[in-house]
Length: 305
Image (cartoon, rainbow, N blue to C red; front, side):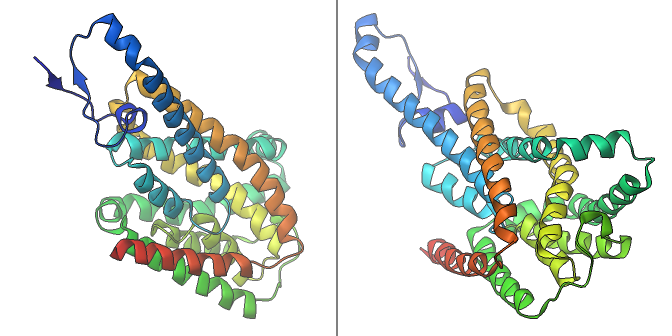
């Protein structure tokens, strides 16, 4: 007698939409007949996992909201299960590792030489920036998960963030010397409070911290580098917190998808972070603002439909 099973990420990705996975015994000839289709769907599923990872890596450190892009892509791919949500959280580790690798010398100095005045000052600034979002995230996590993860909220946040970038770029002027080591504790606290806005899906953590820093007088390149460094403790803490319960429902057959998504996020983030730093030295963030407004409008229309 046939019995329905499934509901895991493997089923959502490797099987066509509408397919019901069943446990039954089939003759070898029938299995052989369906082998090419199975292989084809497996390749499609693997490609989707890589694409999701690349979307994470490309959008995580740009001021465009990786959450918004992952929600939309996941909906288009039909990835709506709890395992799919865990996958989207897990691949953030790939993007984080890319930043750790690119800034490995600085990170090692921060970890090993905190007693040096220069590194101790930067470490203290990052800690001050990290604490506000960490505390608010813990306090409002259930509310955020329940009420804010919707296309309407994400679309509105994208548009509002785009308008905010245009305003900041119009009026903000650098008043702090170049270099992440020059960021004071007071400025770091302001950046940390700005990061709290990124708890709203669609705001963008990098967008909130970069534009928050620029509005406080930090030069564009220093603001971007500081945002990258601040991302390491912030994203590691948030990702591990989310994965503490999510990984328990993952089966072995899902591992390959998680690995492919992780690698896609890692390598795409490597390229984006280096290119983005070069971009911000000669360009404003106006293009990202208009992209957010346009993309947010599409998300809002998508939510209505």
